[in-house]
Length: 303
Image 1 (tube, one colour):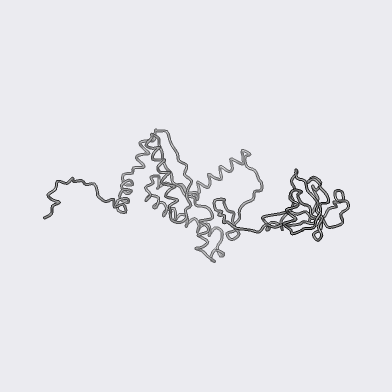
Image 2: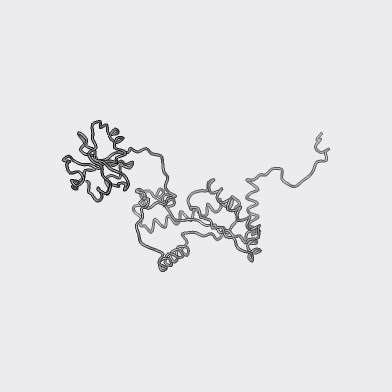
């Protein structure tokens, strides 16, 4: 006997299981069919506008958890502003330029790239970006994000690029643009500049070194009785920069000393560090023969 049929149990059409893999696409399709987003825009067109300026993702690869957190949180903001009485449209967009896209195209083309012109390579990059715009668009929809998916902005659209050129022209005409030099990160393998966001630092232990630079100029005015070779000692944590070194910095307020050694000539070091430096060098027999200010060494040449 089926005792369940003998009980007066509540009856409901509400599903007892979520079945989200099946129900979510149905819900999203219903929003699209009923044009919910477009109706919201029509109903709230006379309200005060709230615009969320959304930094676009790269049109490169499938979405991951970072995309989910980013877009869902922004969707919450847009929806909350809409319900708070604003007209809150959301225009999705994609960054279609940059190294990540070109890097993947390079891997796809391989050696073939060397036989192609720059225009052909750019065409491949444009095709790659367009492909992942469509892929990511569908994946963003599955996040439940509501927006003008049929009318996104793409940084590779020609009107968008023309607007950027126009704005740059207005900056130049207003006198707000100047020509100058700036150090940039450079990728030797990709042969392109890198943005700071594309730089990853790994912990690395490098040796620090002491270097003694022979003094070329005459120092008889401050060291009149010295016949030995004279050196200015520096310490650096970036030894690879030594070949390009163009100057030695001295502190304007420090006192410097000339230290006479038995086998290393006369070493110029900071007075307060002389003892520790000699100990570091393993020099036990030495004597301080003169004290002077950094001003006395200004513009002196070493090699």
